[in-house]
Image (tube, rainbow, N blue to C red; front, side):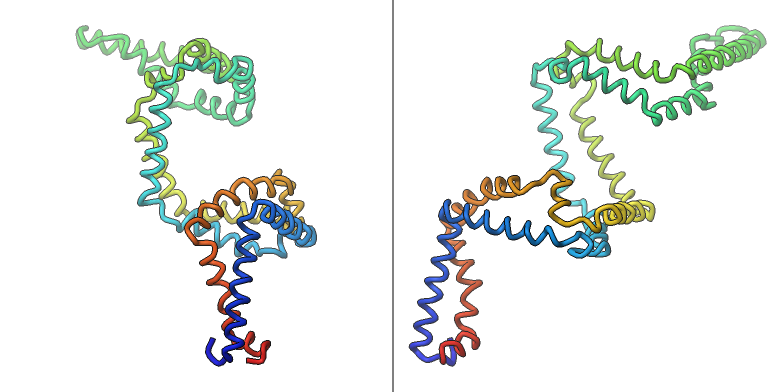
Length: 314
């Protein structure tokens, strides 16, 4: 309080104490905090009604933030380890659970999901591509050839047998694949139903029969390694920018309050979450003296400023 008279400095100290005490009570008293939450959220939404997204923030700024956290933000250190630890814990919990798979997902819901997946154009196109692939035909032929062991036959006979088996197998493979091509969606549905019938009575804990803890760890490593390289490609940067552009093209002229409504977040939701987290968190840090210290740190510069000294006449 350099430059102030002793009376002005004393007034500044008393006003600071009163101001800190007032603001602290507003934060720590449940009734006062509830009123503060209602007041601030109402004021924010009133302003948000008149503020379109594109006026509140530019798409270039959003792209910069998206690039930072999706591309430049490191995924090393504790993050992969934490994901792996969480996955392992969920796996350990699942392997000890005796809940039936049929109780987790009803058969009717499962079949609706399977039918939806089978009817997707993507599913049909992918299965058609597999059935049309020369590699699929070759795999079928090789499987049949392996079943016919000609190694114990005389050389000339073995050559003839192998040739004949290949021709017959290739013809049969083409016939079978062509016949199933038109029923691709039924193949998916039938396979899904078989999976359900085979596993509906099993418990969630039986997942260890098909998925081991090492499989979980390997999957985590594979996902992170893929993400680490994929996010650095020009293609990923381009689709990230396209995603931001689409949001602004669609919602740029939409007010922030309407945008929140589109996202399913209303005034009552904001108030509810503020009251859920605010009081317990503030009470905890107030017990350590953090609230008063923070308020005093933010308010004291004004009461020691030249502006305040000018107001009270030094």
